[in-house]
Amino acid sequence: MKYFFKIIYILLLFCVFSESIIFGNTPRIFLTGPQQTGSFIFAKELSRLIESSKIYNKYKFVNKIEMSQINRLEQMANHGKSIAIVDAKTAQENIKKFPSLRILTVLWENWLYAIGSAQKPFLAFENTKNFMIHENSVYFSQLWRNKSPKTKFKWFNKNSIPKFENDLSEEVLILTGPKYLEEIFSWLNQFAGIHLLALDKRTIKSLSLNYKWIVPKKLPANTFPYQSESLLGLTWHPVLVTNAGFSDELARTLLKIIFSQKEKINPHPLFKDLLISNNIIFLKILPYHPSSKIFFGFK
Image (cartoon, rainbow, N blue to C red; front, top):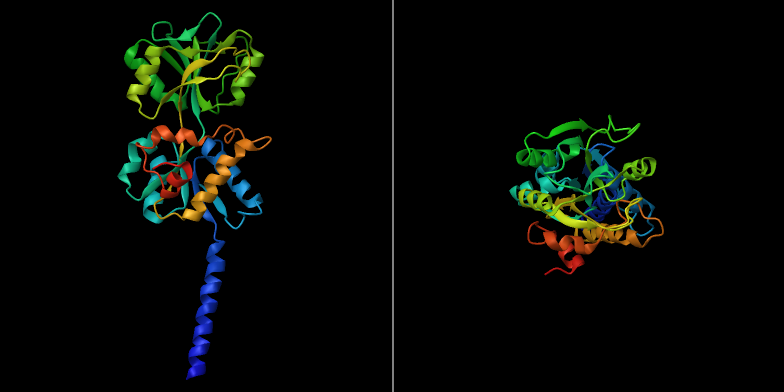
């Protein structure tokens, strides 16, 4: 009988050990948008950084595309999906509906870009009546139309990017994108008659009052070609979301990898300007993961 219990004990140990090996290497799900979006690109690069690390390569992530931002939150809350990226609007308007969800960090800055002719010094409600606008900036058109109902909008998307064959056909082009957007570099280098526009203070105030996830900020001088001065603009951050029960160890690992990239020689553009301090203004607005608060030094 004594030997029988010894055998059972050994078998149990073997099962526990085997399970830890199997499940320890089970890939975790990373919910993102489609392949051309910043969320997918960021997740792909983060997964690559983890897998190429000699220290952290025991963790594996697999990208899974989920078109609906709300569905990403629901899957995280209901099915324990490992991690997701959602936009600022979705996070601030909906995350508190899911008590189990937590924010690991805010991510890269998205800017509202306005491009106009050299004759237009800045963007204001009074001086612009015709826009070419990307569909990712629909909130901007809604507010603008409320203030200036006669404004005309011509829409474009990733499948119909303006070519500017001769000149900017509309008064102003509007689109949303990361700080180092390749299209902006290309357009400004190719067409000397256009430039980035600052937003006037009235426009900034209206947008930031109506959309709480928007943060007024200056785009530093010389970020783009022919931009000799800083420009007053608007930014917002997508967020990295997980469940309250997400591993403290893995949370710290992800944060270390994310915020160490800016020290690299040639960091990925979406990691280049990530700062811990970007989280400060959202600390009382978003429910942060306990490991994030410790990592950021928040009380």
